[in-house]
Picture 1 (cartoon, rainbow, N blue to C red):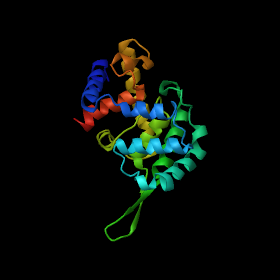
Picture 2: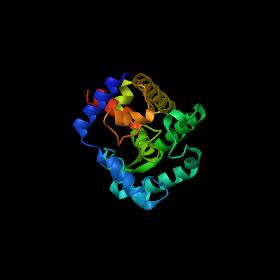
Picture 3: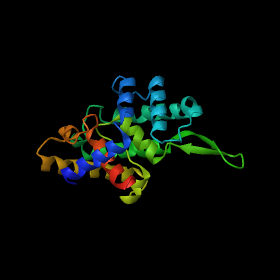
Picture 4: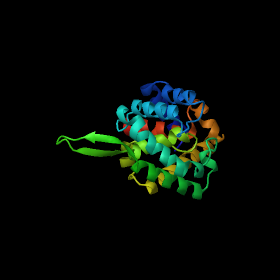
Length: 214
């Protein structure tokens, strides 16, 4: 990836999506850091996920199913993840592997239920997109979100192995642009006019503009 490619992709993202203020509002509502054990934070998170197209988080199941699932997941994984202020470019392979395992567990957790046409009840999971976006909410400096268009185009599946590959790809792209621009990765958001975004979010914005929106 080249600097002009990232800059144009992020400009297109901003032009089509606006200022992306939902992310800023989520951080403000949770005092700068989402606590998955906090019930109020959970509610802000699920509403934010709904606004970002994650319909598997039914409002009726925020408190009864999705919240307890997230709480149980966080009890297992939160302390093993890098802290909120750690940057993607500073983590090692063991930490990437741990994040991939945490993602793999979260995507299988129950988000709710759905009634099918024959009145049977279907189990609804967080899924690959819901899990990646949740990880981004919890660790925005490390974990880029993704969507199914990006997955398919990059030849990735829903597995933790693919999410680890995506993390490495995001880091490789950011490093390439950083070297070309002669600035630190942390300086890239301001350089491309997306000062409120984190470096991993820039990768999501680029792929959303170039893949999802073509």
